[in-house]
Image (tube, rainbow, N blue to C red; front, side, top):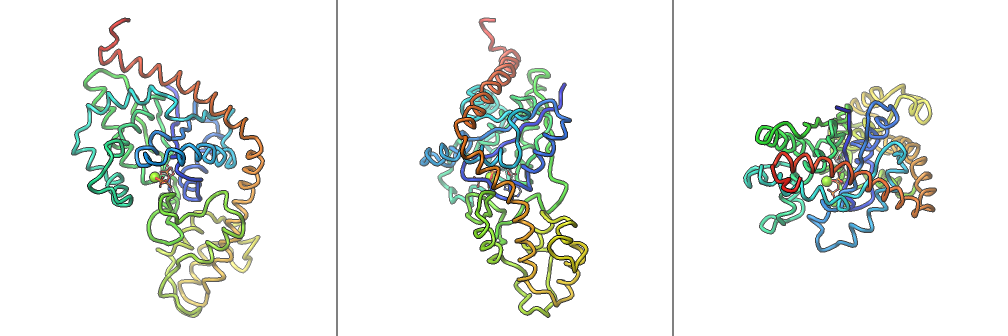
Length: 347
Ligand code: ATP
Ligand code: MG
């Protein structure tokens, strides 16, 4: 059995720095290390439609935006297979069979789905498709026999539910599906990057994002408006770094060499934090440093994106080829599943 990655994003907007530290940066690293036999990256348009049924144009328009963000970050279509979920109809069929292995109350208990229902004000009007999207996610993962799923922390309950489905399927019908493992970022600041409002996780649906494609002045404006410690009123006041979004972003992005380059009075982040905690370090100075760090990280991404934006027909061609390949692999798994379910009548 090979080492296989499946991961993806919903085409509900451009990708943001939360995606970058939570999953994208890790994917690029794994891709370039070359220790995996296959890497599949899915643009989850069918999943995006479960809560955007009224806005199919939004989902359609964002397919290319997400693909451009991938390429900008260094996903290489020669090494990773990028495909569009809805074009692989085998995934829908697998979902249909897996639905029989999950109870309604189990679907309702998924904590991420619960939070997202609240966030979207669905409450009494939950689309059935939205409630069961973790089941379709299990289909996506198992269709490619994925062993490893690199995602942010909000996806933990999805992976748990997927593993339950695999267990149930294999114990009822015989060893057919592969149990996947979640791969979370090691750096705890990257597990769930907060939005610039400091409240919830950075999320396309909440409009609290710094996008990978934001222009330099937009990035700066967003950073300068960020929340910090509300009790750190004057420069002399001692400040908190723990729940302070500016320091969480620094935890996620900055390296010691950034200090040498932009703030040589400090050796590293620990020294900067210690100064903030004892008082005497102003928010503006910290934010300016964060701005320099982020600008230096985002500039090459933005530039590569601009190059790819001139070649969108090539990008669609990559997506098409990736989708053809993905369909072939998913069809093999579907065949195994149909055999296991004894619904292979004409074989
Ligand atoms: P939506 O609001 O439409 O759900 P989203 O911003 O939550 O969009 P997704 O497409 O749902 O983005 O998530 C894609 C991937 O990025 C997942 O692996 C998810 O765990 C990760 N991710 C999303 N937001 C963050 C974040 N703030 N911090 C770390 N990882 C994140
Ligand atoms: Mg999400």
